[in-house]
Length: 316
Image (cartoon, rainbow, N blue to C red; front, side, top):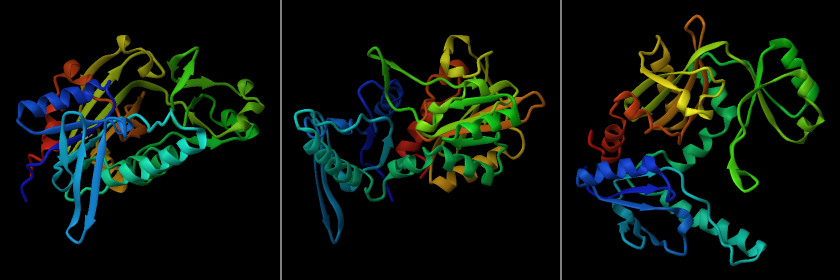
């Protein structure tokens, strides 16, 4: 079957990665319709008809219209959330739920559309406990990990493993004095664990005695392996201190990656590994919507072209 419809790119206004991919698609003459689902219903509208012949209808932005029956692929990046600030709390909650299950349901149901990734599969894969369980099943080495709200259990875990780090289970928007902030990965001691741990779930993990990190970006059938050297526990805290090198994976890693992605139904994934002092790769996480484009100028890897190939469905 030929695929000559548009590529839908679902993301917020400030997304440099999507900008690069869209520019590449435009240079190839591939039609693109970019929109932020958070713009609904102010500047984004849609009408979907479900008939014996399937889904028909259109999605319209201020500058583009997409035929819902002939979407080539959908790149689901980082859309903002639905918002109805003009409504009271109760009515706003109702409107958000209708938008989520209405517009969200429609864009998740497009016929013969390649999703990168499907939003429902992204949702499944974003649960860290599910990711850790599947990482073990797929054959990765995974550091001992504890998820709990029990302070005594955490103290016992630290006593057993010694070097233990804390990392958030999710990273929602968090502001301090109006400034967007993130919760950093950091090492914790038993003395720091108090009753506040009982307030919610926390993730603690045995700290890998690492010499470097590796980011593996999978785009369709292509895998890009990049070693990241720094002296940082969490390399994402200071990009100016990073150096990069393209590397080859040890035996078993490509097969485990494929098993992991197949389990969650993903065609894209950003995997993070820690390399220990004997060269063992330890799985840390896989982000189904992770960043990747900043590594292309650092390494020369053709990652933007690979993503454009995938969305264009060039190989089919």
